[in-house]
Image (cartoon, rainbow, N blue to C red; front, side, top):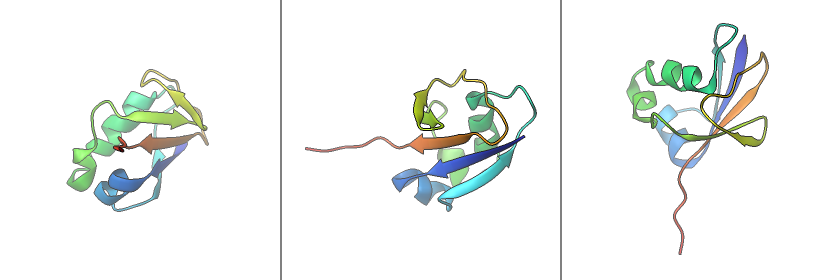
Length: 81
């Protein structure tokens, strides 16, 4: 299955992409996507092991089951004042 991964702000800088299609086996979860991305090395390896993500525009835990065509957005930490 193909998962559309979106990266914003510092995660976009680490990944070098704002969007990436990732192929995963059926039954994969968000944690599998994170592991697959981190295993690519380079800036991807600096993504946190437990990032905040949204699946199809809803915040989701790493245990969330993914389906073909899902969109997973990696939400970087935000600082403000």
